[in-house]
Length: 485
Image (cartoon, rainbow, N blue to C red; front, side, top):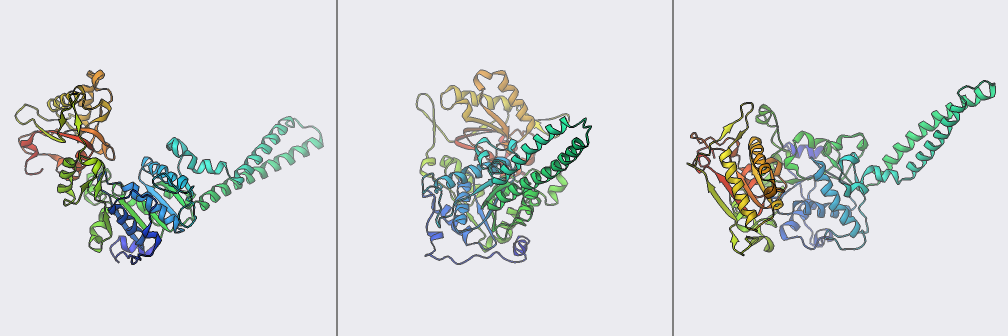
């Protein structure tokens, strides 16, 4: 991993092998539905010698690319460590990789689990079973250990131990020399069996992990003793732009090549200390590597998005991605219609300037709310639902401030019959999610033009791109259009 470290710290540029058109590893894909930019990203990661970045803007199928890339590496005989910051992100990877493993094809139909080259992916998910989705428990380390021969032998030892303990209870009041001698022998045998049980259990764990060619865990889990002395050909970190740099190094140090997938133009990981954030803790490894080596073409950006109406996508594309995004055929005209069939526009601005919708700051704390704006947002949601354009559980209300979340939830509770199912959350809490309709409550309304952290374009990028068919922004334009916005 020495050269990987040098690349990460900007001492030496990343290397890429020359593309060989005759190489079947680049010419064929398990998932026939990959678009051109997704295929380019997979081939780019395959050619990387030490570092590659997969830049996935909202809705572009980043995880689909990661799954295809991992499958291709398995077909080449590589051993891969797949990580992400959260259990949910890891489980998502495991679910999709398992489908490739069961079908041999990332699109869900294939050759019985054999990839090109005849190699089957063997996936082991590390982590406490209580924290895993039920759908991935079959791939968990614990489930695989229970099926192993050494685990079966360990259970045999435990049954023998139980029988000996029952015998010892009968010998508790041993009076004869023979009984005392038998009790001593039984205790010695118990100690031997306990030692053998532990050894068998350790062997079972070691054998399962060593035999896996795809190990999946959280970044924190990569530091666990289960992976002690384990090395990998490739380390893949999904959602890398949401992971603190420090949390990535434990995984990176276990491999000779690193592939990071993420989007540094969405929200970074949460850093509670303002001082730590200013000193650089909020800058992710993905962001730093992209800034250092983008001229060396270390990253390939996915450019076709499958989530949003073209008008919603165009704002994000022009504001954040240099106009590079394209809408897929299915997403381009995605539209909500009222019960009468009237189409609803994809974008709407509701201006509260001059409407006495003033922001308030919490008496204890720095968060803010805006009761007047909250009422407007709930009225918009009520009209959407009542018109028959969308069901309540397909609507989300997003706001930057936790205090406004509380105010909005109070209004939802006051009319639970209508609003039941409407999801209300902060921008940070909605990252990675999507809804047919999104209403954004900006909150800030003041004479100073102070917008706080709304000035971070990444926050608005996340908020707007959660919407599939309709996005409504409720704000005071006189404040939001201020000098800091």
